Image (cartoon, rainbow, N blue to C red):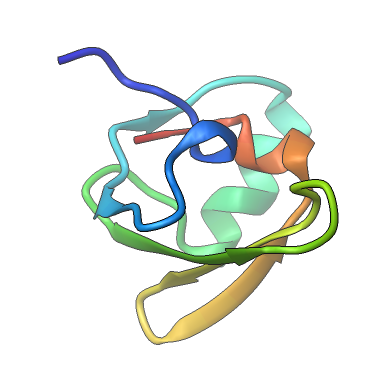
Length: 74
């Protein structure tokens, strides 16, 4: 099964992170927030036209810009 990015998953998505890909500065920020391989992520909702998106990772809820969510492979 091939990975897709977090920005393009269906509204009821929940599953593990397979990896990160993209701008090294964004990747460093995402890692600091806990977006690491194997961590479970749950899509909670989208605002407006899909930006930002609300996700839960661990015990925290985070709002990600579309550009950031595109870096997270699930």
